[in-house]
Image (tube, rainbow, N blue to C red; front, side):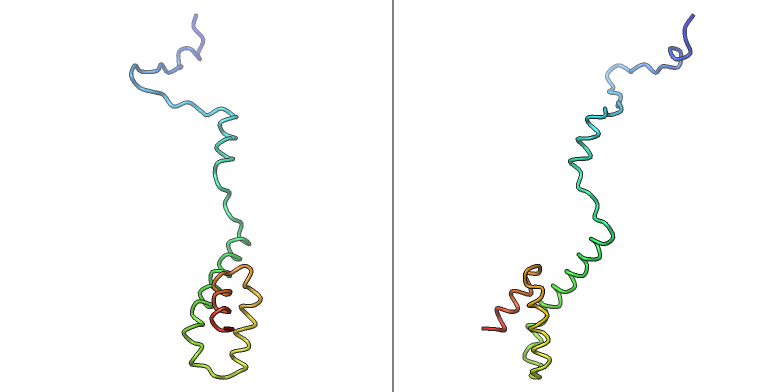
Length: 98
C-alpha cells in the first residue's frame, strides 16, 4: 500500500525545471550579498547631509548678494563644521576663502 506522501507527491514534468527551495547555505550567501537596508536614523542623517550639500552648493550664487559680514561669517562657520563629511562645503570654502 502506498503512503499518502507518495500519492500526493508531484512528479517533475519532462523538459521543465521545477524550482526548489534554496538550501540554508545558499540563503546565507544571498543574505550576505544583499545590501542591508538603512535604518530610520541612517536615512534621516543622509537626508540631512543631502540638504546641507544642496545649501552649500547654492551659497556661492548668493554670496555677492549679501555684503553683511555677520551673514557671511555665519555661512563660513557652518561649512567649516561639515567640510569633512560634505564635499560641497569644502568646495564652497575654497571659493570664498581664497
